Length: 188
Image 1 (cartoon, rainbow, N blue to C red):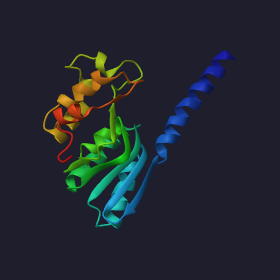
Image 2 (image 1 turned 90 degrees about the vertical axis):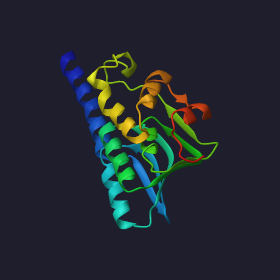
Image 3 (image 1 turned 120 degrees about the vertical axis):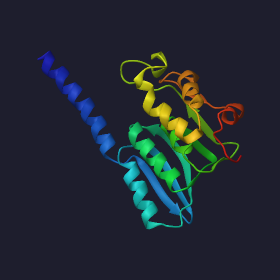
Image 4 (image 1 turned 135 degrees about the horizontal axis):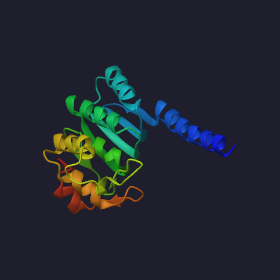
C-alpha cells in the first residue's frame, strides 16, 4: 500500500511539472514596437514569441517585466537566439525584476538597456542531484548554458559568475559593477 501511495505521489509531481511546462507560463502583450513579456519561460514560450513577431512586424524591442525564470533551458536559449537573429533590443524598465533564465533571455538582445531601478537576479542551476557549481569546469553538464552565454556575450565569464553568485535555492541581485564587468548592457 505504501509503495502504491509513493508511486501515486511521484506520478502527480511529475505530471504537475509536465502540465506546467505544456502550458505557456508567459504573458505577452504588444504595445507599438514593444513586446512586453512577464511570467515563466516554458517549452511553449518560443512558439508564442515567434507568432507575435510574425503578426507584428513593427516589434523592435522585447521588454522584460517580472520574469521568475525558466523551466526549460533549451526553450529559453531557442528564444534567445530568435531575439538575436531578429536583431531585437531587450529592455528592463524601472519595475522589471528578471530572475535566472530570464537573465539569459535579456542577454540575447542585440542592444541591451536597463533602467537604474530594474533588477537582474542570478543563481546556480540544480539538476535534481547536484548544484551546477559542484561539477568540475570540464563537466559536460556546463556546456549548453556556458556556450549560449559565450555566444551572446563573447565569452563565458558570466556563466561561471552565476554559478558562484548564489545556490539554486537562493538568488543574488547583481550590482551595477557586476553588470558592467560582465558586459550585460550595451547602453545604460
